Length: 230
View 1 (cartoon, one colour):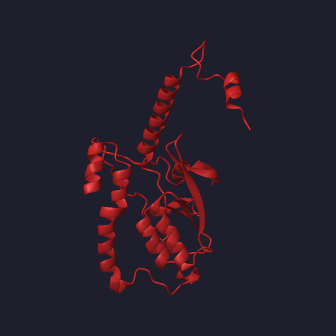
View 2: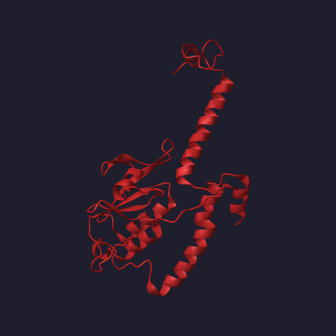
């Protein structure tokens, strides 16, 4: 067992003697570093307006997988890959649909992690020669200046991002991979229910899904209160 007193004698970081920092300064420094890192991460993962209200930009990469003639993204087993973050609920629903349809063998998955240092998503090990999700976006779209978000539906054949909008990815997983799905007859978006599903999706998105983000990522008390009330 470590003897705390002996440890402090060997490394007296909190003694106000010589070149050692006083305890109050260490605490202030720790708070400052934590706050700056938090703001850096939020600036990348949670953009806001001038009042501090979280603003979700629209996803920019919106191609579709399909069997139409001329479509460069044809359905195929083993060709496509999902990049997800386990702390992202938008990524969760792509994993849920993939599991419900039984597409685990057809579509592979990698998990990324948030980094407080870079303020973005990073790979646990290099993917496509990339160490961060931002590098993967740059590989797919040179000069890309938008947000680097998950989930990402990646085409391993063309080395491009097919789509980074979860609502569209789950539609593709539901309808375009039935040939390779274990549960090919399961239809999570039937034609006769599409109107109701879309209505509920919009209602839940505004008040619940995005509402939670607006509360969590609000950077002023006023915008937090407004998000909670709405």
